[in-house]
Image (tube, rainbow, N blue to C red):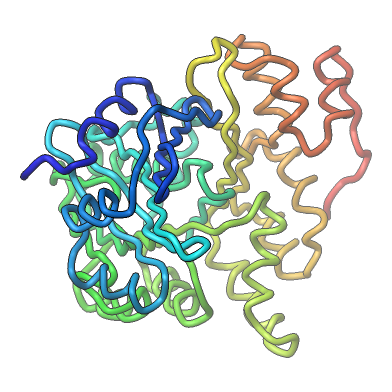
Length: 363
């Protein structure tokens, strides 16, 4: 491993707690630290950027960039760590966005995630969605769940990623990590072939199309635990996003299959800590109980939020309840919680100790 021309700016950013680097031709480097953008005194010319990128990218990824204007890849910087990267063009100039991937795989407790994620990870079959916007920590949560399996269970885990972020060493499980474009042609082809590789768990970096979803669904129905991500903000939207992949005349069939195969939906957002240093995940968790399966099968998706509110004994939690707990524990401020909530008025009442029931019993 050789130090790249970016070494100093990467090492400095890591020391300052940066999560992301925005490196653009003829501009100063900008870091994201604790959710805020901070410009640093490091100006990049085209010659410098072209040389630096040539040191960290593979020829195949560079060809992707020249052909399409985008390339996703990962690299390891000596003495600093691993970075997930996107090379792109903007206004005809080169842009490089990097995300720091911490070397040690964090466990569920270190991530401040609910204990129910351990139970979800220990399932033998079904499909689990981890959802949220870009940068909400979905990959890190998946890594924490894989880590739990790798320390407690004897399983064969196959991950399909683009690119590989966290790297794992075998613990009580054996883990194979396949990178799209390097180890496999597409997510779909890697997923199909993985079924012939004796997996117990298949982790798909992102659910991108109907082909991938149908294969994942079939795997979950035949005794495999499938874990994947979606770019959605809550449980109801996650189910709708899947259904939106299909024409109207196929949605009833897909919804019925999903109602029986779904194990859980974990929705996640990141909120600044009250200390001003770092962020903490806020989660909404939907568990596949008989009531939830019935609501999905009967297309009563608007009632899923009520099922979550009433499903605390099954490990479910709403965003507002999670926000309330974090405020009461002193982890985040009331202001941050209210800014994050989809129903700030209700949360404001909860913070005052007032709780109103919607009065509806789901049958």
